[in-house]
Length: 184
Image (cartoon, rainbow, N blue to C red; front, side, top):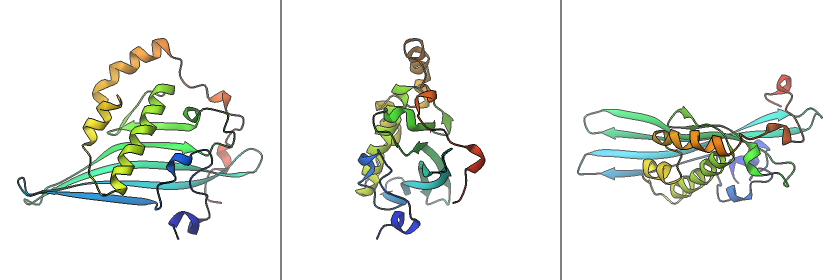
């Protein structure tokens, strides 16, 4: 039985069927490099946070984070954040998924949120998590650059925002009552 069912929350989140391949709340993959005498790893972690909507309906926000680390034979360690964001359950599947993705960070730096950046971050996270589930450690810098969400590509989003308006959160038909966020 997966850990999601033990906690009582639904998995995959409503409206996010593409996350169905994930069976556990966390996973990791490790790669050894004997030439450099290092061990490199990537891990994902999903934290479901129960919230109450204004109509007293229980829902969840899922914090997804992908982190990496490198350990060397000289007892040096380096830990870093790769990608993280929050997703809300989609109670109304007619709305775009982009409206339910919040707080995107790549390499611990906030990413300007618009429809395009939300889609790119979500697809990049799916790819990285699929690689981790299969036991592979992908080159995360290359993936972030491929999906154009690497921090060095910030200028792309300045250009994007002149052509594309930021996500309008007023489109979401329900509002989270911030007074009731927390454990249920």
